[in-house]
Length: 245
Image (cartoon, rainbow, N blue to C red; front, side, top):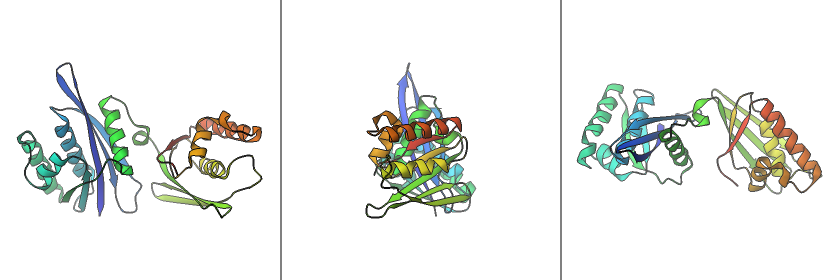
């Protein structure tokens, strides 16, 4: 089953409403796909419903789709056939596209604290401001770092379209770098030129040291981090943290 996490952002500017929509689409066996766009909208609910419409348009035709939203008005309008009168026409458009594409649609509530909901929220905010979120603009890889305190090894996995790369990284207890930072640098070396790494489960220590190598307490760690950052910049590799362990 396919899943879509949607959100919107809206602001009134000079007497008219400007909105943005964001969408994270999950299909089995595929890397999360991210979409966003800007629109003129009378209110936030209309922008939220546009995000649902875009989810149906981007989802594979002829398959089931679960759309997750934190907007109750959208759920009432699309999922239950009721809701604000202003949304009735937009809700009909959603149902028309659902029928045309042969999509089996279910709309359900999801809190904004969910990881993909937060990503959709950021996409929508950027779109409203006329910005393009890096993850939606170019090649990217989802990075998962798994590390157990009692084991001197970390598992680093990169998922990109059509490929998954996994490495088991030995963590040197005598290194100037903390183990979590060693694992992070190993992930960066696996990146392709020009790729954005969306890193999950990096520790607060690893994130802080990557963002500001000068925070390292030991000179050797400072040097290693600065060198890794310089090499990543030279290859056009960016690191974006999705959560902290």
